[in-house]
Length: 317
Ligand SMILES: Nc1ncnc2c1ncn2[C@@H]1O[C@H](COP(=O)(O)OP(=O)(O)O)[C@@H](O)[C@H]1O
Ligand SMILES: [Mg+2]
Image (cartoon, rainbow, N blue to C red; front, side, top):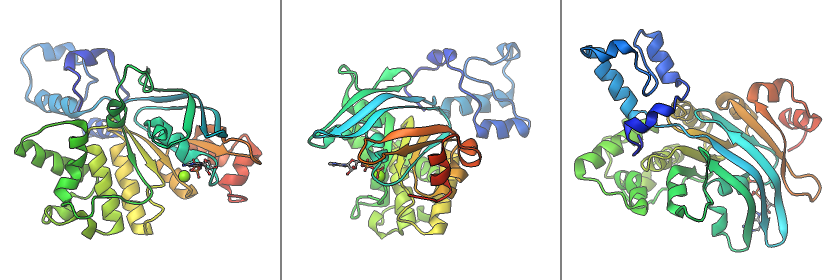
């Protein structure tokens, strides 16, 4: 859901999500915003109310576009003119050996890089065509639109599960009454694939959950501020294989609602979850750059660059 009035959505026709495709397969019609057929201009058939709800609850998906991103820590350059378009509604995975600048790139995508003393950058990051570094835009806007989930789950351990989910609202100054909060907590925990496991203990501390559950709690917390993009930096590397699969399934559900960019060292994971993939490399003291990017399938089955072939086949890294 966004704050955008429905009328403004008529010019935006996002591709059908997998969920809508499933609805169509089941026989229910789904129309892009503003594109309902003329038949609906007459008396409104019952089913269209449901469609209206589907449309109203469906957020606008956003494309993220990084252009010529370079990054430095002091005078040490760690990224050199990296450009990558991360399309709406799909998972993009960033792969490459440690130290090649993947996390730095991810932090630049939501203005966290600038929190590090000595850090600087060049280039542009556009979300649906608007530069998040434009001086007239507030920092909190970028952070709200572009959420981040880290390698190590970081819920507030003493805070209740319920309050953990809502923790981001304070940062963005969003106020909500009790009913709306209850609804939001349930919606976000459901989307994060955690609701059924915690609905009976919402007042228990977040720190009491297992690692995989804590990571899903962090995903729910990110979702509560209704981001358009979710960045995930090795979100499963501290988790067991079962929790990893649950998070992967969650990502595939979520990608209908948010654009996802994930850093992963797990080549199977990149293939399971991502549609698009970018291979980063920093060769011999040089700053990191993208060697190759494209559809995940092509990157793994027929990469153009021999270094990509070697990396995805485990020759180095
Ligand atoms: N806070 C920091 N201060 C100084 N150098 C850093 C900092 N964070 C990362 N670096 C350096 O930037 C380069 C890229 O690191 P990083 O983005 O973490 O790579 P990756 O996520 O691909 O492992 C490395 O050389 C790393 O040592
Ligand atoms: Mg990293």
